[in-house]
Length: 130
Picture 1 (cartoon, rainbow, N blue to C red):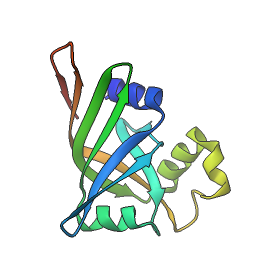
Picture 2: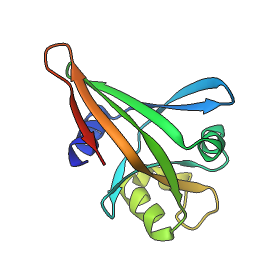
Picture 3: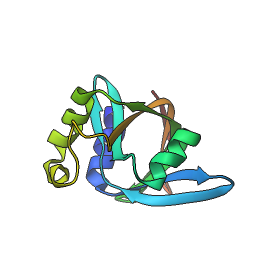
Picture 4: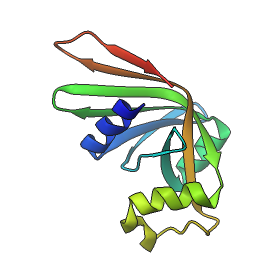
């Protein structure tokens, strides 16, 4: 999981796919954190992406850097604990202008049942489960 985290941090931006009914939705994300040995992302509960995740927690993200790409497929689980939100916001202090660990909008979610696959055109894929 640390390898997945490091790659996503290196990329800076990754793309998260959800579904809205039968329509796929993809958008850029930039937050990633490890808290209590789980891989977390962050968004706002008022956003459509949050509503899509709550309706169907199966997601996939994709990132690319240095000729390699990463796909992570899994389920996202909301963690409403202030400690988890605070940990994320401390990792991304620029978000504190929009979010607070104590507000009712800040949402942090962790991956479960995740499969991460690192790929490139020159190497065999490497799969990690967490």
